[in-house]
Image (cartoon, rainbow, N blue to C red; front, side, top):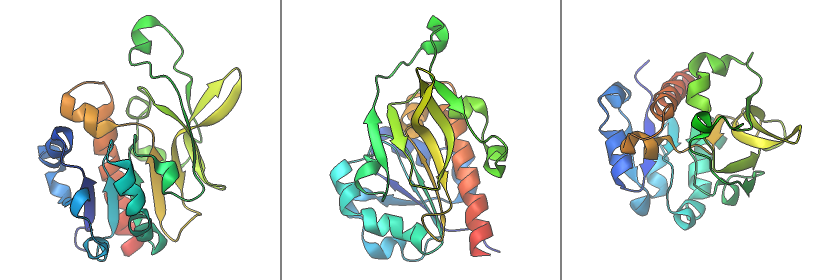
Length: 211
């Protein structure tokens, strides 16, 4: 089949534009869609959507039904962090946490734990891609699969990344991580890995679901 149509919703920041112009991502033919000009027609024919991190939360909430609708009709939706996902993704909770950017240098515990590593999705993601830092914890919808959880005082309190194949006819990948920002700023080991791996996974799943 032809290459899946993957929309990349962005806010026009320098990091978003750097991501769109990244040579390693050109084979995926990401379709750039500027959030401020988004209309329902823009997503009517796409197989998948990637929502870049650190976008305008009110605009995302305004267009949330349109974006989520891609997954509802059987497509793939990937949502990066700092996007107030709890305001427009059904069944999602959120609690902020302090961000420790340099835990591996200070020897501190980042509290992030890999989960369900037997899931096929892990064929696309390394530990370094999934664990660098986070901005808070998500409570995934019932039935979703936590891929990276946060442990506090011996208890798992939420997820930094989850995968959902039960809430819609499609599939969702949601994370509190902000790889576009850090890739564009060339700041944070693992961020570029997460960005590349997510796009690769989205393309793979969109191809499988639309075939």
